[in-house]
Image 1 (cartoon, one colour):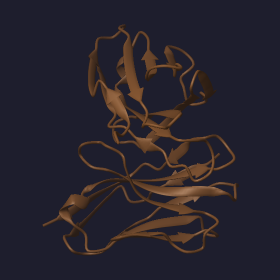
Image 2 (image 1 turned 30 degrees about the horizontal axis):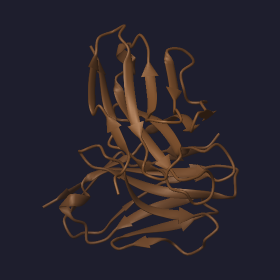
Image 3 (image 1 turned 135 degrees about the vertical axis):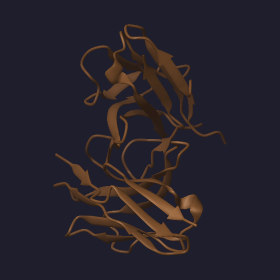
Image 4 (image 1 turned 180 degrees about the horizontal axis):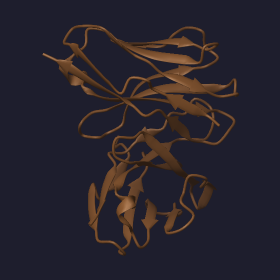
Length: 115
Length: 115
């Protein structure tokens, strides 16, 4: 069974600091995609960043970057220069390309950015 | 370019009533996924549909829940004889095709409250 584990239920940092959210996953598949989604208080699910498992280079989107360690099955999200608008729940998820067409989500990390 | 639309945004039902949740995918998207989010949890896959076909319903409860995606019109998630445990946020996502790097884009969700 595929599982995603986010070991940090809550995190809190000061504005402008850098914060790293952890995610580990378990799958026997070799071909998959990994995602981080953000869910602000509005509850809308917003795609933050995506990583293809076959790519060794870590994905980057502006202030957001990932540290993808395939052998360790680890996929952490780093937010640099954090802003108040980054306050949200963050969900790690993966998608098996050849398998069932579904996202498997972790339990989420509640991130609070303090002024 | 409208995103994924869901309605209603909030739905209140009494135990035993029926709930109908609607999802209109993004323009050009022919694949629809439904996920359920219980309070303080991550999203859990329910069902994956293409036009007029249920592709994977492995996450759907065996009773009272059904889903459809007709040739014309929105996808419908139907819950018959609702119970308090059905109270959750229900998210719809769409993608343009199966497999590959296609990312699922989420709607704003429908929050169902069962009294």
